[in-house]
Length: 192
Image (tube, rainbow, N blue to C red; front, top):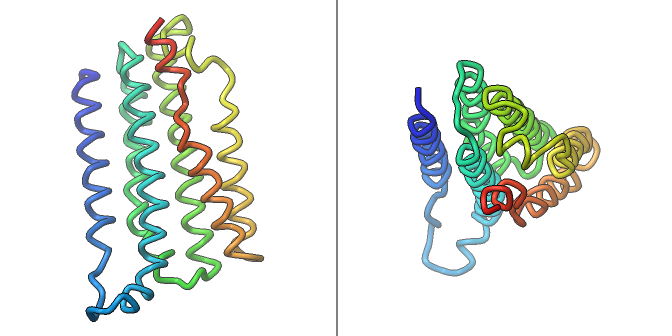
């Protein structure tokens, strides 16, 4: 499979994921502004998940742009990432309708954590396929502070879900905001 087909397939899956998430948003029952209030938790969860999926799409694009070769291991690692991302609509819907109950909050964090681990596996697979002197290897090197910090925040959020679900969600929001500023390592290396 070519790198272009892998990217096109991934883009299509991510587009479907976002479409499914937006279809979970329901119109308010009524015509007054106050009728929107019950929808606020669902909408805020959608915004968080949209940022989450959008960040993966953006970074996935840059990572594949910096890659020349695709191996079987890359295909499987990419499918693993897409599998965990495909659970985001379920996690989003459950969290949005849960009144911040512990299990849905923990499940959301677990899906985020597993997506992060899968992304790291994909990155490592691409570097292995392209070689240690590749553009991607030079860009990311052995330092991924944001990635490690993200996994730590998700881990803390999962544990906190059973103690203080709102604090756990705050950790997920912090992680999303951390990635709102794009990781410029790959883009910088490509422009050199």
